[in-house]
Length: 214
Image (cartoon, rainbow, N blue to C red; front, side, top):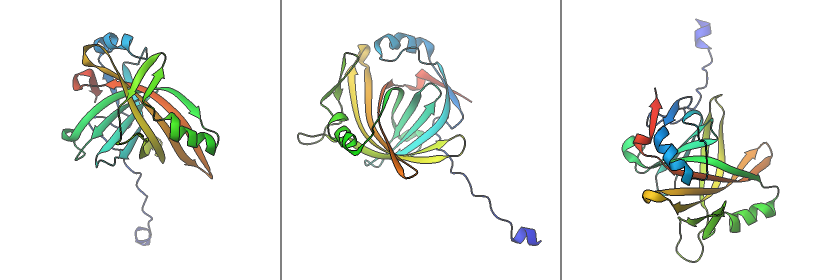
């Protein structure tokens, strides 16, 4: 009786968001034929056709929408943007991104240079390919867009990262585009701030392009 009265409740681990059948620990398959036809135009090559979700990120946007990211074992993440709600009916954009490069930022001066001049530029050149800035502000400057992402990992760890982002794109055949995401990331690790510049390339995903593994 007394053991029941004084029994301590076990804190619940926050649950990672799910959508489209995508969930932490799940996996999905990319359409092999479609990716094989598209890949020669992309910066990436040899993307894994089967990808395992190892972490899930969630960020709330200033527009009132939200962004979910399903990080995989292929140094990639499937990003789902929603507007006006959290159901599949509110999905406005789905992209598959692959990490291209990560550069450590060692001091405050480098971080300020990154925020002020490196992330947001009218154009961004990568491997000789020119990408044009998508998010334009009123006036002569278009500062990076700031979001805070909460990331859920398989071991139960939950962390937050401040991100300062700019989106670019370049045209491909058949009215498709390749997208480029340039992000300054800042994360509190103990008493220190861990900062880096992360560059990723991506492309739009249609429902027919992926199969969710049950």
